[in-house]
Length: 264
Image 1 (cartoon, rainbow, N blue to C red):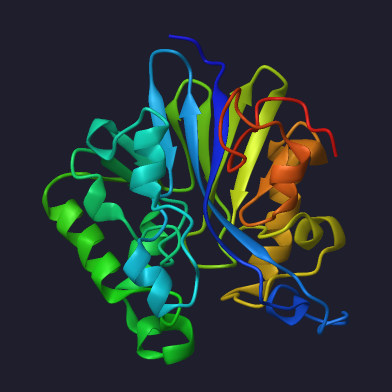
Image 2: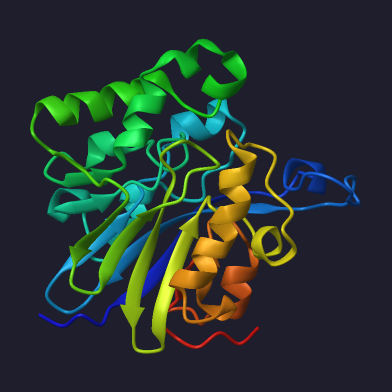
């Protein structure tokens, strides 16, 4: 089995009508437009495939005014990876847009930080502002998977497969984790919501949804320590990712190759 992987970012939803005040804290041109993309990621090495996050479905998108382009399950099927064939899913955290389709992946082992499970089932969820980015049914699905023996807890850092690691970051949620992947161009880090946009970690300007500011800021340093360079850090929601990385051969503009060299 090779420990060098290919990484594909699949954009399944987007929201154009939003401003920078929804993306950055502190001094900023808060009324300027700032669109957001929603991704899941596929890791492939020729003999194994790992999914990173599961996205949300059309019903959740409608409830939260996040227009779906195509459900993650549909995109993955078109990519040759029907949900029933997936046996490993790394859940970076349990917000609705990252763990909203767990029910589609009934045969998969789910890799999550124990701090995240404690957070989403603990007293912090008594506060509406902390509870808002989660959906109760998604949490129930994770608990159900736990009782079915399909949850693997990753305490801190853990190797999921040769060349694929998870590392606890925290900050955005208690159990936020990033994914470090060895590719032909070196170690790439999928930040997920450890950094929503390139600008978050490059300028030290956090995203407004944060449970621990210190952990968020330290997390930017951790991302840099894990990645071979700033160009090897992939944020969780930035439309620039699609502008800076090549699309798949003969494929959709919504699927780009992160193991390739960036052009931006």
